[in-house]
Image 1 (cartoon, rainbow, N blue to C red):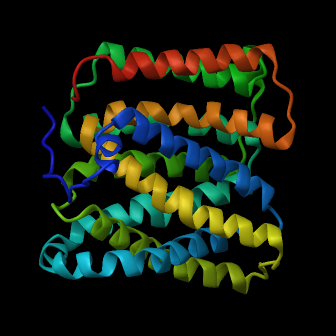
Image 2: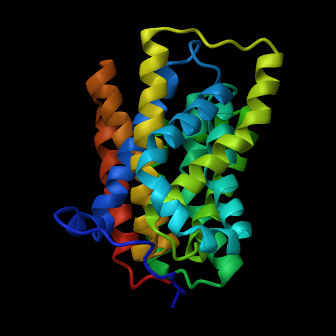
Length: 311
């Protein structure tokens, strides 16, 4: 069985039921991150990619500070004693992952980025296996690859033969590095110290903002500029609240409840939610391959999360 850290703070009241429901938490996570993809595209040309990552984490930290400061002060002895693992989680889970993702979306095609993003559960499972020797069941692998088939069906618009004609761009390396980074982050979440979940999130977003500071300075030195507009402000606000605060609270708790490999299978839902949002909000047309792909994604997630207990 995978060793687990003690619960980092308890939630009481009506939220307690939801906070112990991994499927609900992870679906909320993937919905927020699907929105992040759509907002990232929508704000292209208004907010430079590294600046979006930096402002996202910086604003998230300011929002969290009044609610988390007293918790963080109480947890300070534990935070100081576990600085190395907190640095690792902050750097991989926020500081590098999202910056690499935003860079990738500015230097590769949407199809390539989607295909590489679909490899996320595979990298999570491999990281858990390689770093901690977790056992990945046949059912979990089956579920992962069934979901991959659904993602490929949607990405290629029902023509799987198009996969052979893909060309790889420089941005593909950014996306690949992002998924490797995410796998490492998810695997190491089991090592998080037994501090309150709000303390953990505040430390995480603060490290992410600090790590991105030199990169955003470099980006600005190369002439990238923020275009102040309603669109850019909405994009920054959304990214700071939903993908950064809500999603990470839910994802961290979901991994704690069911383990990294099974939680990672939910990453495929980003494709389904993202496609649905594009249809509803951007007016894109629903086609048969969308329905077939969505069905495979859901089937794969259900197979993976119901295949045995947490490794």
